[in-house]
Image: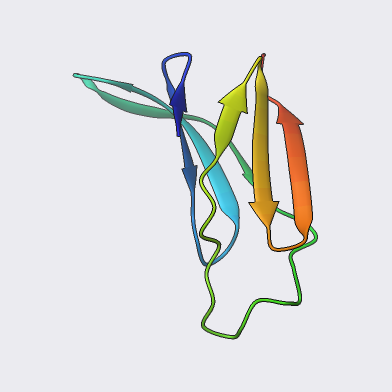
Length: 74
């Protein structure tokens, strides 16, 4: 996802989210987090397919039956 001049990249295997400031000159990692807990309903070769949603300074992520909300306004 992209919002407020920042990329929110979700790694579909590990559940790691990286917050990146990107510009024509390059990129800078601003933060990183890993979804925990993760679902037990995903198959062994399954992935996290949902897209990150950013609204009103909040990052929303879903992993099967689990739903996460992170304050990314800072």
